[in-house]
Length: 122
Length: 107
Image (cartoon, rainbow over all chains, first blue to last red; front, side, top):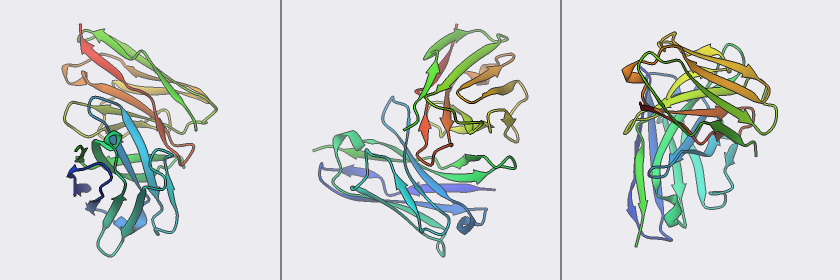
């Protein structure tokens, strides 16, 4: 069974840093690109970052570019999100999601973790 | 960035109703469109990918259609467990974007 488990969330002051982790199991982690998606309280879904399976290429939403860094350790089946210079508007539930290349050659995010909550407040 | 606009933002329906949600992209995205269902306190669940392909394990009352810029999610006969929020998402660009969501509520 494919599972993704996020951890590392918590309460942090504005300007602070936090590192989120996502551990995958039940599939060959190193073969899949991965995403981070967040959801502010009571709001919709916002994609924030993407990393290829090798870890060589990363993409970021403008809202986090220059502050957040996505990385992975395929030997540990782990995905990370280093978050620096955190702001109140970064308060959200952070999900990791697996990128799946379908038989019709279209990408989708087929499995999601349960999320880890980040709260940025004085 | 590709903007995704869903409508309506919410709707009220009864069990057994046919429900239709639309999603429009700001540019052509071919069929790079997925639909997700999210219930309170849980992660999004993939329903439809490639605009019209049903994810394994998803009931056949869910269907998707469309290509280019206009897409539709249809629930043919709403069931009690279908009351939730639904999101469309484009994967044409690596810079994923989601629609704002459609909340399906009990009438």
